[in-house]
Length: 639
Figure 1 (cartoon, helix red, strand yellow):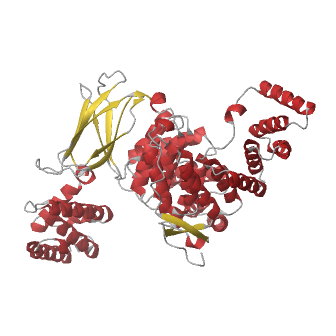
Figure 2 (cartoon, rainbow, N blue to C red):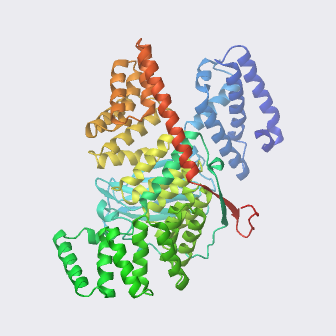
Figure 3 (cartoon, one colour):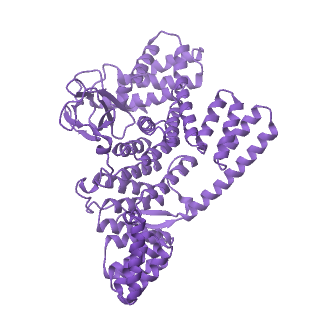
């Protein structure tokens, strides 16, 4: 396929080089003839794209594709072993060495920087790191990341606070700076034309000031997203779980489903936290006063409503409902009281009654808050189709951050993955300081197997508020489930562990990121560092079963089965449903000559796995998947 896009003068050369490689492999020069000959053939064909005679923009694009293709082959084959065993002379070896040299340069593949100084595609990003008073900051770490790529490059600010990244490809970048407790906000830079020289100032402020949370700043994050950007899809119906969407193995699918459910935790609850946080004595006095007022005039609308509303905010829903019903009987047209009654019924689990009250209000007034409440009630009643339509109506009536987040969450929960990505992406564009929107976007991208983009979104969310554990929790889950390490995640998890050293989860997640990296570049010292972090995680929280499990795996890797058995037993004590711990414990017992114990653990593992699979199936049947059609297309009669 590569040869179809090259000029004809290279075809004969490729044939000659490929023939030489195959001949060499047939003579036993390579470790594995079948694998190495195919790999080296591809490498040699790729090397044609980096010959000096190849010029022009089209050739450069082909060269980049070839480098990317060969890079993947180098990672996945015994190519380096083959090189060490092959005869170190001849045209094919020179070609192989040249392509390996290119592949070995991370900057050439990550950012497309080339050695030639006259490349027309080059752009430069330069700027200064300053404090709030505009004074230069020397020695600050400046990080540049390519949007939608899994690579980054770092430099330090100079004596004047200056920095520069040169010979970059055109595109979008994220740039941040930090130094010892101070950090800048993430800045987005778009270099759209050849020869661009973008200049930007990064202002360092203390963490609390730079990342005071997204909630207070959403209203200042720019104009809200207008609903003229109408979605290009329509939810036409629902189907059962057997049509579940997504990519990857069942483990990855289960992870994406779990993340979709956890996104709902990020939705704010409609309770008055401010009232609940008040003085208990004041609450008691307020309740006595309101009860006395009601006793003095039981037929008063205000007396019934005020005490009912007080109980609603206190979370005493069963006490609130009869009082709000009493007020409703006196003044049935009062919007505020009826809305409070619907809220109380929803919170008390009386969803049918809540739906009836909301429908009555919607008949008289069309508002975003009513559609939002209707959607939440309909989801609880098992009517997700009506729910998603009301979520969409709420976003249309009031395109605020909460309504877009709720709409996207509903789509993701019911496996409308690509549509959820669209909603979250537009929401993130309108509200770039919303950490939960970026976190949800990362979860949706992961569900679609767009792992690099998912990691960038989650890393950006964590940069908005580094003290918030939620983005770290999501990125740790994504890092462990993704097929390959995601480079931007490990530095963030390292920051999480550094800034919250007494957090067991922070130590565990950073350790697992280090372990994941060992798949590509084993490093005994890094594994020792990971083991220290895991031990710290278990010391901080003895119920951290996953950390005990990983300690056992590391001990098994050293053939220290006695220590591994102890770790696996502690993992099971911490979490009796941790199936993998039973399986690995069985393996350890088998290796130490105790087959009876091994069989017992294997049986327990199988029992737990079966129960877990059944629970997943039940859950999938309960959460129906949306059927999506393009906007403007009529649904089929059976939908």
